[in-house]
Image (cartoon, helix red, strand yellow):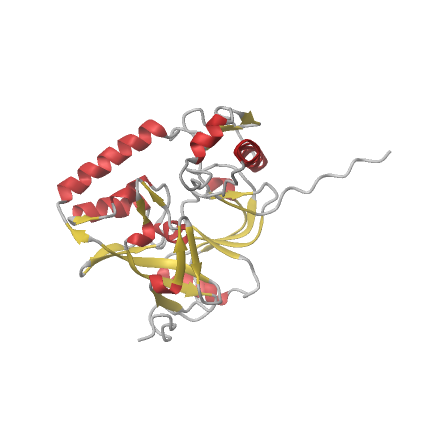
Length: 317
């Protein structure tokens, strides 16, 4: 069987237009991203389940920009807002279960939940996922990782959906995968809906102990008490973005309501009603200073989308 072939019509491929979720217009994205900042999206859809999400995608125009969002933990929407449609997955794609030797988890499942579920099923290898503040869908899309682990190292196969609402089963061989990098080798546009994770049987108690240790490290090192989007930049080869930013004297530097964390320099926090422009300005400043001082181009780990506000023309008397 060709794993990239679309599934035939039937189960999980309802007719276009048969969607049952909630559609909202001009939805403020600050409610849905972990930075708690940014503009609105033209249309926001909240599907009720897996089939409903596929039906909604199939019913939409192919030319409309479409983004699937989980917990918004790695996303900034500019203050001018976003054209197109955002589909929120965390309320609909939330199934997680043991399937034979693998664990099946849908895209809206929080990554830490996978870590805990695997440990409770006496499976090892997913403990690092406890430190990823997002969903399985986001982790798959960027090969998220921490504490020496990366998402795609434990992926057996994934389920995706295309613009026609058709599902495909794919494997690692269908993607170009690297550090915080995942690109489909075929032409076309697809989104991750679920994955099967291959994990070895092990001592569940030991896995739970590892998870507790990792969470203690995270609490000690990261500004979890303030809105943030996790690590802003990828670590350059052989170094750490946080060290470089701190060495440039930017730890604790603020622009408007946003600040480079004084606890971890690769985090930007919303300390007081920050705008998306405040946050993006700090991102640009950190990249500029590191480039000037070390000649290193920091690559963003967070995704920035949408439009900047249109400047108002000066009034004429």
